[in-house]
Length: 211
Image: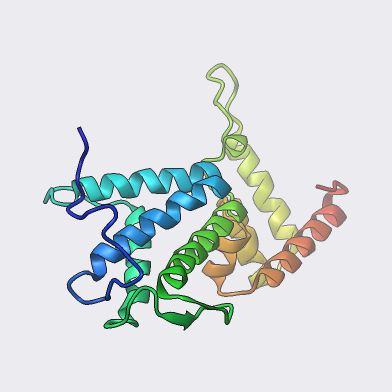
């Protein structure tokens, strides 16, 4: 049985005029199309978003349904289209690369831009639930966690870190990646890396161990 989103799959043309009545419908179609094309380049991440957005559109009339993060891409498309109310999808505009393209193409590029921005942040961020940072607990092994924490705190105090470097270290300890630390502390990526290199040097001087 074929499900219907409430609009015809092929109803969009380059002569379609953008209006307040159809802007959400157009935004949904362009977001779906953009994510579907990205599946060929970014595999599982784009595919999961595409499937989630399809589910959102299937279930949007259910008052108890909460849309996924994938619907953000529809909102991005709609926000772009809001600047072109009254124009046709085939009208020529200048995109973010100063190229002359249709409004439809520019809108899809805007969706793609935000996807790649989020993709790069996801790739550069080490989540706390990574398997290599969460070791399985051996129930028969003596718990030395408190002793380990005391040793870590002693080493950190002996390193005599400045506040900025201490803040960066705290973020790393909490499992944050470069992009996340940069956003949290409102500093550039280069500053995060410089403080990381300083931490490595101080640790090596103090313990003689290089990591």
